[in-house]
View 1 (tube, rainbow, N blue to C red):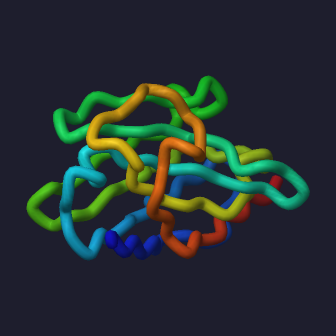
View 2: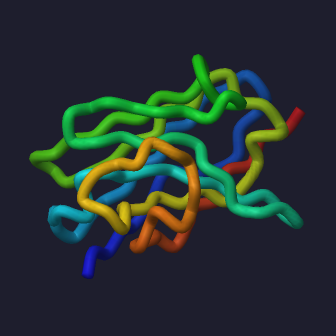
Length: 125
């Protein structure tokens, strides 16, 4: 089992920035691929981006150029730097660890087995 705990959410005005963190209880093969997802009210959970242990990333088109995923393997922490935030970025953000030992390079929830509790991000216009 891998436990994931997010932090860093909050409220910000459009154009602002936030940095989310996700602390993993341990690293296993299932943390070779980790990701960020989000869920807005009334909508399905959608992928924001994923990263593997080599630092290779994949982003959703909606956040490309604005969001950056990084990780500190020594501290077992995943980050999501969010810049130029828009009201449509408002959602609960979740970090996740993959079901598989390697990224399948797609943003689908079924590829991820372990989830954090989520952290709220609210962007006002």
